[in-house]
Length: 125
Image 1 (tube, rainbow, N blue to C red):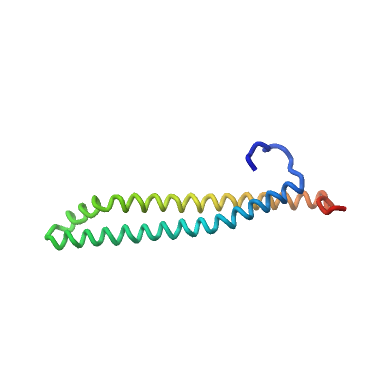
Image 2 (image 1 turned 30 degrees about the vertical axis):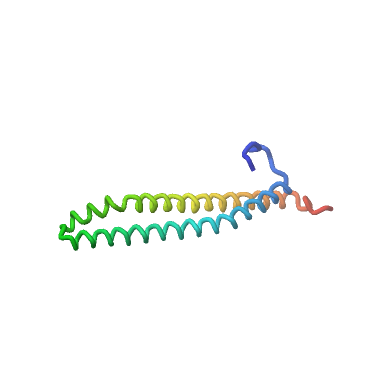
């Protein structure tokens, strides 16, 4: 499935092989998406918690709400960057999984067509 055979008709055995490979990749992908989602949510939680903690500290020092917000934003830039990175990783994993599901659907459609055209193909008869 390296793309070098696009345009070449696939035989029923190759379609079934690709269906199995794609289904395995989807199974792996579900776990990857779940882990990426957990990381994204955890980094969002840490960012919000740290920003609130810093803002509260500066408000306790007598700074205005706007000044405390500005300082908190500046001091939590690394948390924001990590959050954005994890969110992008999650979205990429999710979108890639959707692509795999579409590929599986396409392969299953091909398999149905081939099975209808060649009902005994790949059956060892």
